[in-house]
Amino acid sequence: MMKKFWLKTVAVFISLCIIFSINVCAYGMFDVTLNSGDVVKDGQYGVDAWDYDGDMIDTVTFNAYGKEPITVGIGGFSSDFQEPQYVKKIIFNGDGPIVLNSMAFEGADITSLNIPSNVVFPEGTYSVFDGCGYLEKVYIGSDLCNNMFDWCGSLNEVTFAENSSITKIPRFAFSNTGNLNIVLPSSVKSIEEGAFLLSRVESIKFNEGLEKISNRSFEATYYLHEVEFPSTLKSIGEGCFNNSMVSNIKLNNGLESIGKRAFEACRYLKSVTIPASVTSIGEYAFGYESQGQNGRKKYDDFIIYGYRGTAAETYANENGFTFIPLDSESSVKDVTYTPSWSSVNDYSFTVKDRADKVQVIEATGATRTFARNNSNVVIKGYDAEGNEVSSLSRELDHEVWTIRTRLTPDSDLKIHAKYKNEWEGLTYSFSISTLSSDKTLKSAELSATSGKLDSVGCKIVTGSGVNKIRIEYDDGMTTTVNSSMAVLDEANMTCTYNISVKPRHSSENNFKIYIKNPSDGWSYATTLTYTAE
Image (tube, rainbow, N blue to C red; front, side, top):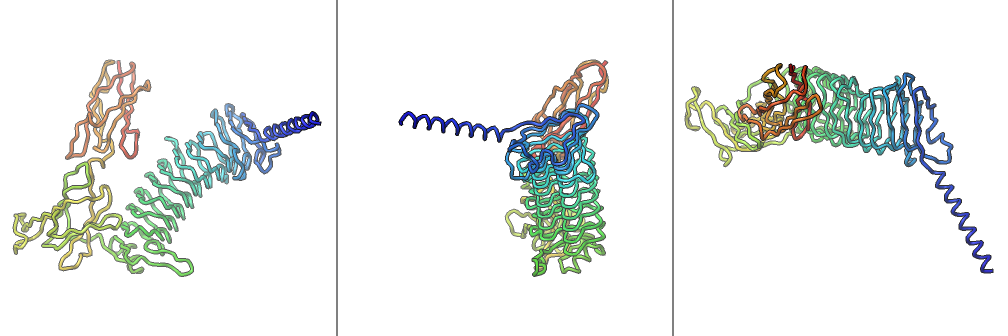
């Protein structure tokens, strides 16, 4: 009996092992390789149509080495967003045409993606990589399509090809994405509806050449705090930044229209300066918050700075907001200071007559108020000819207030004075810089542009905010120099580098110059050419 029991037990165990091994095989992983001329039919590898006992695709490889296109039909590799480990990697090889149709890789489990320029999307294509929830990093050498990365909630790094020719950011292309810091290609002309709707975009650098930002493009972007628009922008669409966290915006001179509700429910935006070029401002564009069925709440302390007789004054008056004109002279003017590395400095302002107080208004709306007897304030009085007089003298024409304080560099600041317990309505607009503010290349030159195959002198002048320069030679070798090796000119806020470069070969040598600053990293600046005999 005991012997039969053990035989039965072993038989059951073996049977279970066989069943278990079959299940393991049933949920295996396999790869798909596509060559030039191959066509993936609509939904061919999509999980809804998949009948291979639950097997999952690990890697899809495109070998586009021929002239015939590789085509992926609608939903060719589409997942249902719940299926685990479905298409974990996509590899593009070769430069032959690759055509991706709508939802081609919707819901894939890829974590990074490098899209070359030979990938194209037929007209009307949408949601090619929609719902790729694990996607973190994308390099875009191709064009874009509608909803291309919609619901890619982990996407936090997007890089466009240096020679990108993208002319628009399509509808909902980056909506519902992760913590993005975007630099747009110089070719972009428009940002379409909802392009960054509900994304966690933290910063965006708009390119010169951008002309239009469409409706709801940045609606509900809760991580975006500051926005500076390029000089080429003409229109901002309806609800564009509605319910976002922007607290500081710089509208460009040349802007013509601002749509309805464009900055509605921006509760941290306390004021706005509207250029005279703006001729149309839609209702509830600034200073309001929607309360659903209860109508709208108006921000009573909202301030509009603008020019008399323009749309800015009309909007302020019609909505009962404080309007401060910019086309009259304030009692405060002429800020002077010596730039330093710190934003704490001695700032001197010329103030008409004998004021009781002065107040600096930051771009955020925050204020700094200074009284005559403050310990960080020094005041000197002058007559009309500039001779120093007592502040109580009848000859007093103006005073110079020198205030030691911290002001925000590279931002729009305003200052006004208080006389007899009343603040003047007009303000003086100004900005200040630190030695780290200027991050540009000023000039670069060689001591000679042709000669023997010997070292040649190179002089490079940058803003004092540049902390490194790099020379890249034709053979790929580089020379990097820190700002500690440069001569700092504090008065002009420049750093001068005097170095030698070595031609690598006879004929023409190219020396590519890159500059680096702590906030933006490395960027290409210019190329110097030397012809060696």
